[in-house]
Length: 145
Image (cartoon, rainbow, N blue to C red; front, side):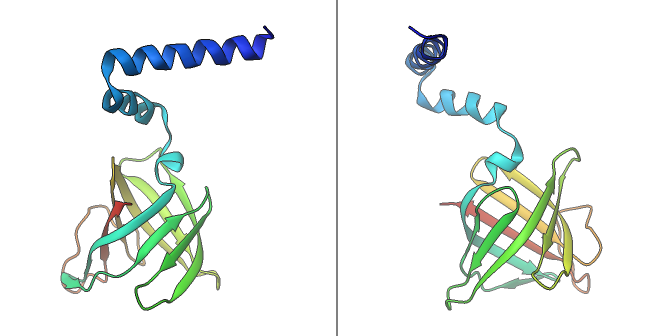
């Protein structure tokens, strides 16, 4: 058996043993530990809540993080937009910058907790996940679909 094939077989066998001993949910917990936020964030996230300047707004649509730099928003009314983003996961909480096609950048913070993603944004980068009246801060909570 070639070296690459043998390595793959060993990894598959090890994965089967881990799943058998620990169960599927624990297996995904292990996988989660080894992923970066850039990997964790990818996929489709449905809007659960939006708070803008302390006021709860109607939730609408979803966001798809397509790769390490591109996200797509789709609103319930059919409006779509393709944006760029950048994550810096070396900070706690993580930093996110969302860039519109015209170059306007919106700095924020983010937190991924399994299937829940919180993003808090403003013209100046927020330091906490809150949106107070008059703050011009938006706090969005999303759920992985």
